[in-house]
Image (cartoon, rainbow, N blue to C red; front, side):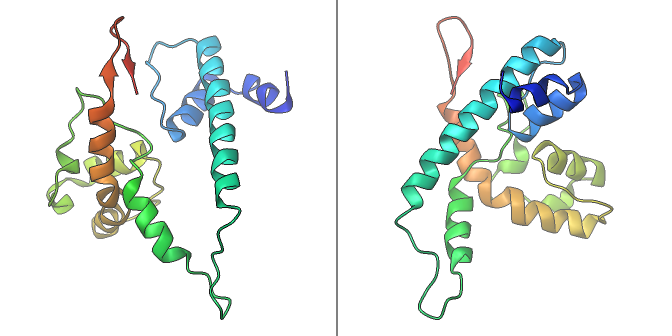
Amino acid sequence: MDRKETQLGKQTVKQLRDTLLKAGVRPAFNTRKAQLLEMATRQQETALTTESDHLSGLSSLSLQDNDGSVVSDEISQRHQADDPLPCIPSIEDDISHLAPGFNPETLCVAKLRNLLLINGIEYGAAKKAELVQLFQSKIAPKAAATLRAMAQVKPSSRGIADA
């Protein structure tokens, strides 16, 4: 067992659930600690492999132009729209907030906070206007990619959804 697995083993069930939710994995409410630990370990291994593959592909890219300023804003905006939200909703979830042209001001504060929390977006003690702004800047740009990701999930022969 390496150091990361040992750290995961010391976490409580709630901490393991939070770790998985931040990674976009939604375990069932009755999942046992051993299963959560296995899921978290697998998630970390997958994330490390994906990150190292991504970084090796970026080694030839330069994010600085001639005057030395970083031009990552344009790249990150394009990249952000292509990535789905970290927590992809299931078929049973209400996804009306992902519809094109959705107005987040129609939602109550509690629903806005819930959507932001589910997607790992910190909002602190924000008022409704700030919550709407966070929704528009963090969730709305990724809505189309999230809907595409949902459409790619197909049930397997055993009835388990495989992405």
